[in-house]
Length: 317
Ligand SMILES: Nc1nc2c(ncn2[C@@H]2O[C@H](COP(=O)(O)OP(=O)(O)OP(=O)(O)O)[C@@H](O)[C@H]2O)c(=O)[nH]1
Ligand SMILES: [Mg+2]
Image (tube, rainbow, N blue to C red; front, top):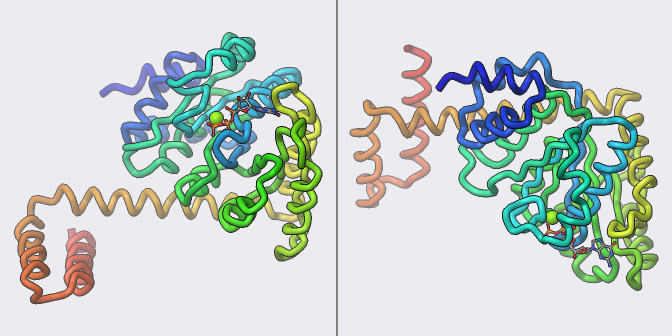
């Protein structure tokens, strides 16, 4: 496939071509596109929004987008979330209420397929962020449900992560804290119009006190996303974190960590494809399967031998 027109379209900020580029990226056809776009990336401010299902992440993302638009920023939204109003199963009311951002040419909204992206969702999301970055979106918001390791990986494409919680989490907070408390740079207690927001904020503050001290103490902000309350405070907290990252090398350290994770994922994917597409390996492969099946050898030893051989052959070639 000739990606030239798509690449030119992305660089010109053309929505149709941006959409095509992200679709190509989802199919795992990223390398040509991203190589061409790379020198135009690295400019966007990338923010992850995560939290339990139904916490109000999409509503908050829409509000944040409106706020950044008022600051003349172009906003890209990547929703990695099957039930998001951004994706197929749109909640009509939300769409109408927020129709402003759907028709605003300064906002690009894209939901990612949550399954089947070649090389994983985290890889596809990071690539989609690069496409939007190269297309000139200055703020990129990634929404993902914070429930598992995959989502944690996805949101780590962002330099700042906001974790959205709701009042009355109670025991839930214990259950989810292991996963998402550690990745939160900013905490949002949304649905503060409901009872218990103060208590949730207090519990959260206590938990943050217990975790290891770092120079950045994550702020806790109360919001009512549906009514736009507290949004400016969230933006202020996000921007304060950006300032923190820029000072003292923390931003550079995180960037390197992200790059390492990305390279590792690409290498793993490449290795996997090499193994899967090698005709010369097929006899060994069959033999390997047979040996384990007949219990002549354990799978670890067999895999280890196959690995050594593959690496040797790759080096010799
Ligand atoms: N009372 C109240 N309801 C809210 C608030 N924010 C969002 N909601 C409602 O909560 C519901 C879920 O909101 P979403 O923004 O779709 O939540 P989400 O976290 O994106 O949900 P998933 O993507 O499905 O995990 C919707 O009916 C919103 O209108 C709030 O501050 N207060
Ligand atoms: Mg959502």
